[in-house]
Image (cartoon, rainbow over all chains, first blue to last red; front, side):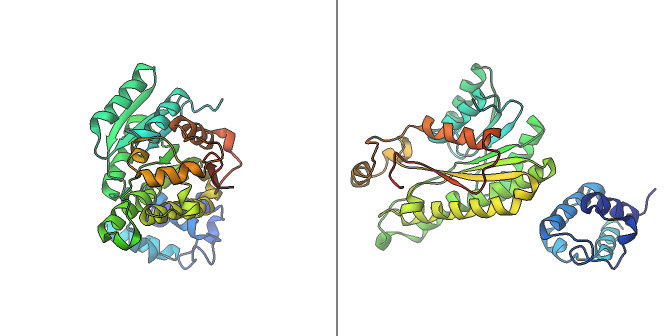
Length: 78
Length: 248
């Protein structure tokens, strides 16, 4: 079973076309991974599908790094 | 001839007038059609029946376009029935005409809610699916008065001018995902809605139409069909004036 980080990483690599080793916990979507604001919206949509959960707009706005997304998902799954 | 075979289109306010005509045209062009209505269930079902009798596929779905939950349910039902949402025609619209000095707040709010907020709500609701598909067509039915202004229709004019601006923003935000957004700005088209306009407005408008006649719903439907089809693939953010030449 893949970890949350591995699954999030896969979604990010597929969506943003970045290398796997660039996807670090502290990497920010827009600053480090080259996403524009619409990419972030799409990323959140795909994370919702991947983890079968709803992420509200308010919560999504609080996610700026890979680590934010991973800890949000882990917390919600717990 | 524009072809919509295999596409699924949601037409808001499609129980009568321009919307009903668009629903029928799109079905003729091969689209699966969602005939949205708010109050006129019987008329919506008659449109669906007419489409099905002609060998098309259509369902009627009730939803107030300004109600996000109802609209989401409509999009979900569309996905369950047809599997995609390729085209959204934001057509639902109402009038509550009055001189600005006499216009009540609720006359203003009702029109802005249905005509402008409704476009925002419906567009937002289909965008997720269209972004995933990397394709989509949004066609907004504005009005020529949104471009030129019209005494006695402050609320309606403001809503339609708003729709034109919203169309341009939608076009810019979603272009990179293969989604286009265009508007149609009809002039005076003979429908239930324009029959309700008072005689003064009707007379004033007629005197301003170079082609010397009012338009027909099918003339608007043809333009909407063009914008919803692959024929319009390089066009986004535009407003087509279908007004007999009123505004040039």
